[in-house]
Structures are given as structure tokens and as C-alpha cells.
Length: 102
Image 1: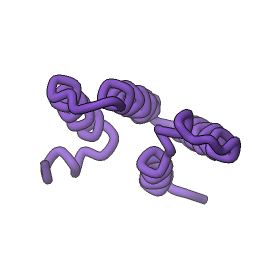
Image 2: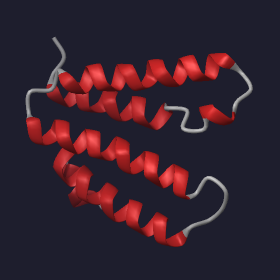
Image 3: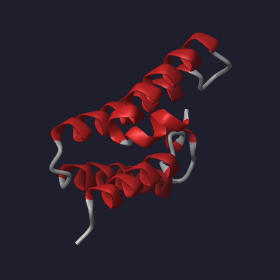
Image 4: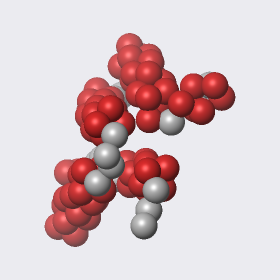
């Protein structure tokens, strides 16, 4: 049975490998991969018993989505700063040891 820490690591791995630019691909497989990736993330996060961590992981997914779309067509320093602050805040909840290292 996977521990909460294992589930968090796997969820963060899925998030980091998700194809945020799938809609720009001319391949239908990119859409399928993106849907599968998002589904795997949602299903995995739902198995975590700590509701605070679950919310933080979901919020991190949303923040990443918003950041990618804010910077899709060019640099956006305000969006980058906002994302970095939000990511640090959420990672401090998800993995408190990250806050010490940051």
C-alpha cells in the first residue's frame, strides 16, 4: 500500500509531466494523453486522506494551468511572480520540508 508521501510524489510527478500544451498539437493522441494524465492525477489525489493536502494539490494544478496559459504566447513577469509565490505557499502545505529548503 502506498504511503501518503508516495502518493504526493507520484501526483507531483504527474503534474510536472502533464502536457499543458496538448491543445496546440495536431495529434489526437496528445488530447488523449492529456486527459489520461489529468484523470490519473485526480484519481490519485482523491486517495489521499488529508483534505488539506488534497486541496493544496488541486490548487497547485489550477495555479499551474493558469500560469501556463498566462505565459503561453510570451513572457509575463507578473504571472511568473504570482505563480512562484503560490507554488511556494502550496508546497509548504504539501511537503513542509520544501519550505525549509526554499
